[in-house]
Length: 139
Image 1 (cartoon, helix red, strand yellow):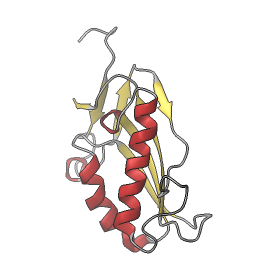
Image 2 (image 1 turned 135 degrees about the vertical axis):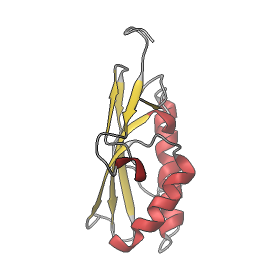
Image 3 (image 1 turned 60 degrees about the vertical axis):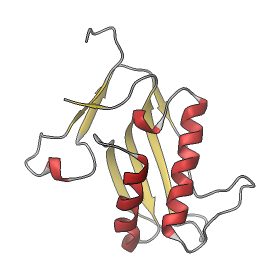
């Protein structure tokens, strides 16, 4: 790989416990970046889908994120960082399971928070940073 070729490389081994978790500790890229607005569980008509169903809302949120990224030349495989906002801490295990349906290793760097979302029926919102034209690889 030359420095002129776009890349997005994940670092998963910098901390002793890091390889065991479903996110990278850091990613480095030289590709143009896309920063998304918060994506949520909205259907085509703008209404919240799967009310009360965390897995259903999470899948819709990831599908919406994928649509946004593809519109600008990126994809879920090029996400280098994400911030996840969950309305209920108890949904974190469900989130980790659903995330594996949409991301393959190496996973993006990630931060997950429990917050009060502005729309009471929403259980998840997420933002992402993606590298245009490349997919994550591991160092």
